[in-house]
Length: 554
Image (tube, rainbow, N blue to C red):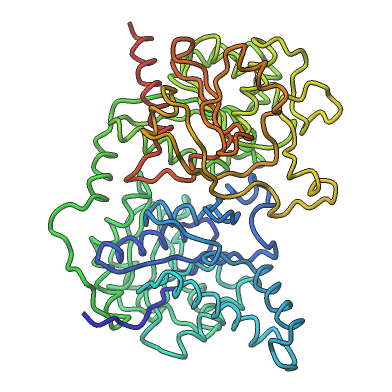
């Protein structure tokens, strides 16, 4: 088949934020990928931040890290998980990043002395970035999610860029609005008016949606579809019902039940390389495995980024949650997660006993001193009670501190992050980071992205991976202090993963004869966990948790 010109699908939001634009964009990309198209995805964040690295996770959610070290929005993780591909910094842009490029170009006379204006030069930079991402991936289709909600000042220039791309080729662009239809409890009727207003606001930007993804608690009835079709100027069969589902991974399948890929093909005047598959795809089989998983495995997640006012924000650890689920499903188990704020164990040490009820304990990444002693107490409890323990980044560093204090006899063992004057910093600032800290260079200066590591044969880590050389994504400034390594190893801690130059301790563990599963990683394995390819370390942790559950029952 002759190569068709690239197509672009813009996903925008209406009514409220957090309604599922990222999942919608990922799901649309997935169903088009299943039809044989080469697909890439872009996230546009309206923030003035250059990247997501300096954002508070309790406000913005997880900071996701790509192989090339770009710190970006958590939706980039969704794109990678759904499409099972590795994206790059080309696939992520922010207002700050766009303006920075425009200003740099102006300083370099790239505009040849022209008066540089917000319009058209800023949206033109956005267009150039979208085209660059398409060319880099050689993609048939680019799915672009524009952050925020229609009507906000912050995303007007991105909508203008989308309009400009459609102007150059009307058949190459489709607009999808993801909107929310509330059902007020006291009214008892699903309301379409907020979506109608959002569409009118989008119209004011020169854009007419081709498809409306109608998010709601329950499926839309015909009456609601008719109203949206009539008042929003959208064909009734282009109003797609998207009720709440048990798992976001069901969304692509639900979209195809309404023949969404065929409708997109019609809008974009294109043909797909593949017809719809009659047999179950690997994705459908994965979703089926999810539905059939009934036996449970209970995991305690002890972190510090849960509270946002009176609410719990589990999005701060989104990739960790999904990684646990993928590995549990691969073992035909349903992961039941319970959140604990590490502060709770500092205020009330007696609460540690509740952890005995769990099959496994996980301490994810984080920064700063708050809640650290609570985490260390949890790690000590997991080690002494032989409960499977998995520590990620800070969770690994604190495991080293706990071991140093209570096994290796290093009095006052700590991290220089929290006690700069201590003489017992078993976790210290990396040499390469010292200049950054002195100059207060924080943004995009950590050890970021994919780095190789060598594994010691016969260890839990090497057995899990099935190889002695790996590559994993990092996000940290501190490391195990080399001067304490001999003392820690002599006391029984095994550094089973080490950087190729032998300088950085990447994985710490206890031998299986000492503990069934006590493993910490300096990197973030959750960033490479995929639905169809669970991460081997998470799977080893879940297997140990399942075994521990069986032992407890006896």
